[in-house]
Length: 537
Length: 66
Image (cartoon, rainbow over the protein chains, first blue to last red):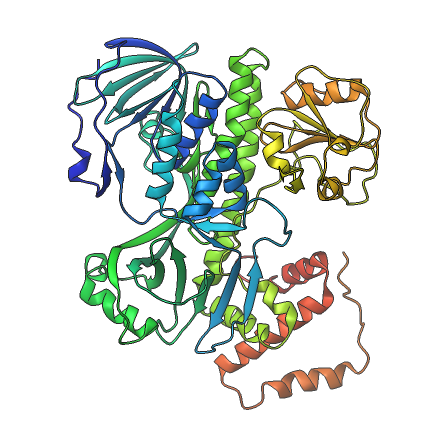
């Protein structure tokens, strides 16, 4: 039984909002559970809602009995917003957050950007390219949504102290202020962050690069008439030789990231008297602001070798870490739970073999590797590691003001977009020539207006056969949506190149599994079986 | 190999002379900067990642990492 006294985390971690610690569960001292999720951060909560919405009983264990304060994730991508929308909090996130699509890059004292980009090149989609919102607001929304689901049981202040991963179940020892108890879980999902207790208890690897640079996060509250855009400076006069990032959050809070360099006194750097000159140099000597949160961070690009370890599954920061340039941390975590949820659902329902989880391992690692690759490249551009790399970086910035091609090389962060699983075993390769049009298997369906609403809303979280015309057959386990019978479907048809008679099989996470110009029932059934993990016949 | 390694340039001596003249009077740092600009311009003009990769590999022959 969990005999250790639980840590009083309120003394160690700044509290944004206290939540009453949960009592001992009815099943204590020993209970059984289908799914235990460890972690009450954004990734754990989102996974709990996903599985709860699919009808499963979920126990969520959170070591904190509060929502923590502090500057953490703030940038949420369109793909994450699409996922959050499916979980029931997309619209309120956008309403509460600061919407932005445009990023600008500045160099030295130049007032005009050397480069700018738009994160939502395809318009007429429900969700914007990005929103910024404080992590605690989003956590609060997800908690409220999870509490609407009677089958989701969040236990605040319940800390895992030991686990025993077995073949048929996972033993979990839990400590809480009300006492210790044991859970015998069919599945355990570790969403417990970069210092994952579960990863540590299992003695698992976590490999990659650690970057030796320090960045100051200054979240400050100030009134100001700046546009809701991502502004990034290379070598500005107010932080010579280094970079600065400015980003708007709700409530007139602005995130400013100052690159600090290697050998610094981390304690001294966050003292208000040392932050103040940096802020005044940047925003003007007479700027009025209040400190919301200061901290210093370094970063790493690492991942576990595998995310699936028998009945223990890793998602989010517990499985992979990236540098913050590109907003690929939490957005990568949402991609994980979106991928994992429907697969575990099918396994629990007996509609798929547990080997389907191997595709979670592959696809989530493909996402993590793309995120790590991109954020490593951005980091090397932003903080060059040698004289010659600084010279090349500056040559790119200089040329970008002179000739158009160089703008494409400016890398202040390649911001998170959906990752394609073009090599996934779940895809059925095209049998016809789509001439590069539409959305290929392994990429997510593209939102478009539909009827009074949106395509992605209509897809929901199940397998859908999207057609242009009545296919003349139905396949069990797949809902057919005939776009030709729905008003305002022109863009949805065009974006997926659905010519008359054509059809696309879309997975519960909105990824395209297969497509046909002239589908047959057998072909759709075969692709469905393959997308559920059966070997192609 | 897609990278052309046989003679491929008319008036090679004249082009070489221009390359050296570009650096005339520059200190090492300025020369590195100008070279970087030149490399970036040429890479974009070549426009073929395979050829550029082959050139990068060949240029690195004989250095410690290669």
